[in-house]
Image (tube, rainbow over all chains, first blue to last red; front, side, top):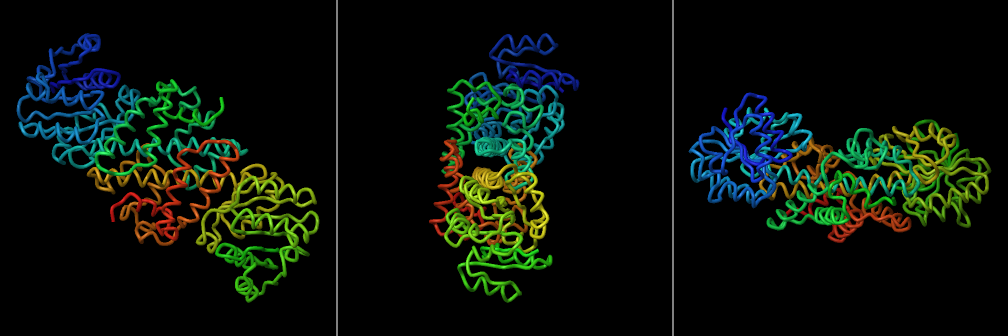
Length: 294
Length: 294
């Protein structure tokens, strides 16, 4: 299959390499020439614009940093929608707000192209290993049409319902994840401050009603679990600034929808403070540093 | 074994009945004569005061509503410590603040009695079925000495470390539980407001990093799980006012320890509002009613 791929950063680059491994040919585009060169060195064709990237391919995939990028890459003067032939499917794997996602899908629809949203979880490690989870929003038949190609880059391809629901699943899961990580940070640090051994407390919580992924699989207290960021000074993993981005998206989406998220709003502020304190590059479990004397 | 039991309410009564079933004889005490009569009808001996209840028995168990009750039942003029013989072990199963728990244990120690804290989880249902979890704080040998008798009333008897650590484990677990329940309420209600099916969203979260006991075992959104309070109008289960009590204990303990609990403080305020709104008697998962239009 000939695929147009736009957005060749930390995530896009390894996703492209996995598509190449599966025998697809790629036409690629990015604003940064160095990122394009990394892939033309592997035999990809360079496009001069998003419109050019979408011309003459059988599928377009985008992996972009934010909503304004997605809007301009699809609907701008030299955008994908200007170059793409009718009936060619479009996949946006960016994590953006569900409203923008649905608006751009509607613009595509109006000219005869299906755009599904397919944000990912699994990070750079998952992109490299080809084990990403894709959360896909779109009609069932469109989900079936893109499932095979997504399987070249991911392990778990989940249909979340209609257009935009991939974004909703992603940001609402991460809303819960951020709050539960902070809950674990507060519970662990208080239990230790009040005299408990962190491993004994984690053992009790993890067989009780307080258990969560953040406590039993990704515990933020140093030394409780091996092979997690808290046991290697919070390096690797999912960056605090990426969590801050998702929390900002989800609290903005909640405001637009007039839906309260009291704990979500405080979680967003705590990650904002953590970033200002200089910890934005550390794994998101490092939020416990806000609670531990060091 | 002859056991003195003080505090014969919703929890104490079924705990006494399980001790009787296992062949123990009981001397019982409560401020409310009706509660005493329920047990003397079953063959228990009535005591005239806590001191009297502790006199001539081989073990004393207390199950009381709050810290001031525990302090007065043990250290008051007619308290347990006035009547009990040296070397008789004492078990307090009340949920109270760890500082009071340690102070009273110290007073007992000073006159030659060991007092272990052993708060429970599992509620009235667990007390009736004899399947409570006991979280025990005290020396290892004292834990071993009381383990057998606790097994008459519970299934899971966990040693949490030194005196007071049973309380720490209980209230810090419930801190995490309350925050995670609200996280689930915010995530579920926002995902639905933004267009997702609640069951589809729960299915995704429960295989992702947002999973927690509140989402996969006790989901607050009506109709997602069967046989949980959310599917029977929030009846049964663990009352919101009991969660409010534990959140007040844990945030007070955090203040005394000068340990921040930002989300815990908001959780305490949300359950306080929920109680003022008239929902204190509903299961604690009903906090989602603060987020759903009804």
